[in-house]
Image 1 (tube, helix red, strand yellow):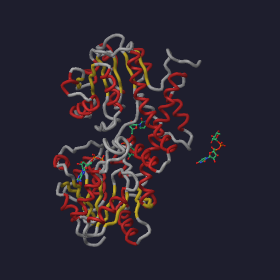
Image 2 (image 1 turned 180 degrees about the vertical axis):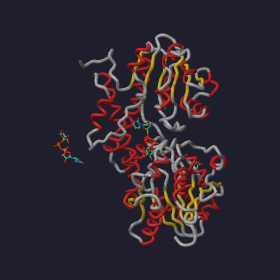
Image 3 (image 1 turned 90 degrees about the vertical axis):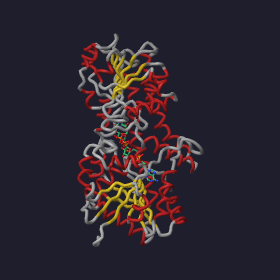
Image 4 (image 1 turned 120 degrees about the vertical axis):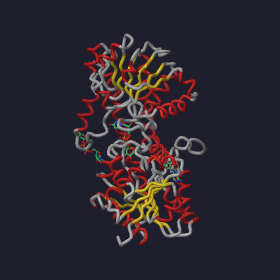
Length: 473
Ligand code: UDX
Ligand code: UDX
Ligand code: ADP
């Protein structure tokens, strides 16, 4: 780097853009790298500039507070930021399309395209544009076409997919397993752009962990990594059903299988179903992509990962209903956890939305407690899922301030997120405040079933043999 600092901008201040830019700023000296994070939403930017950041990630606020104003800046002045930058990351949202061709499967690229058009219109010097949003492969090609057709200057497009997981974003960014950068290896300009991004990451990532590939390999790798991870969860979940009926214990099986070094121990935790903004979306993208190439057998293979996940959620809900003597009507049920996993306030595709939605269809009365998810988010998820207004739902849904409050007077406790605090609740106290018989349904393997049974609970945990139903002896 010369005397001028490298100017890095990022369009989109969400779960990906915010933490990624915070880490880049934290890991680089201000005289060498300056970072501007840009977003359409004035509210989001204001939150990033405040004491209460718009997303919760362990360790994030410390990084942001230290770098903000030094080499990290949040702003809504998007055109300005584009003109200023040497490198522009695009980290806008890419939800699954809700209508039109490919609805429910293809990615909605409206926001990516809009960002591209904004870059093309504002940029007046050559830029390196880095695609960070999870996008189906060949998006870089589309980006490139739009920029070239509408731009007044030249652009190099790189693909740099993000592998961070929510709840561990800062650690994942600071110590990534790998950084993947796709670019045009065939031209000199392409190689130079690649090298510029490699150098940025090399401030804190060992070079051997920075992989460079062609753009398509990079884009596809991201979809495949998430598809493989989701597949592991569906694989263990499929076996959890077999365990319940046959007398094996899923944790014992997972441990035994995971000790095989070729398989490995991670991502073998059975659950009520995976959620999050990426897994389902990326698999659907992969399926859509395979179908568009006529690879129907491959598409069906990956689709089955989602089918198992949907079935796992239904199976869990059906089990609750069956235990409650086949009727949940007007029974109070305590829902513990609404986020799609612990240590995040995010509810996108959370299994809790489906389980709660199905229980509401049975006219159950839900009392929901989650330590992080804002009340507004729960209401908006449930009104959308149930297609009912908030007033209509209010007769059936209350939000509790504590787990104890949710449990009081209920017929059942249902655990849907593995928050640490659920491991150490005073279950005997909760039991005393509940109706009889008192049920507990553990969708996340957080409870000690033996201890709970001794208190008096009738327990059901995913993947644990159910003595009343064991068919093989
Ligand atoms: C396997 C298990 O590895 C072993 O633990 C078990 O006890 C018996 O079954 P084996 O059948 O001897 O052992 O061979 P393995 O090395 O696992 O390969 C099985 C097949 O998968 C082979 O045809 C191999 O070529 C193929 N394979 C393996 C691949 O195509 N790709 C791979 O990445 C790995
Ligand atoms: C995922 C990928 O891990 C990350 O690399 C990618 O960049 C984005 O998608 P994230 O969605 O944040 O990250 O969460 P992750 O920890 O992967 O969990 C996804 C879902 O799978 C959660 O609902 C989690 O509870 C569930 N899960 C995960 C299981 O049910 N069992 C497991 O063993 C692991
Ligand atoms: P992700 O999980 O992919 O980071 P988020 O929804 O958390 O997705 O964040 C995406 C952000 O991108 C949102 O804050 C949204 O306002 C912003 N955004 C979308 N399109 C544009 C655009 N054209 N210009 C600036 N910001 C945008």
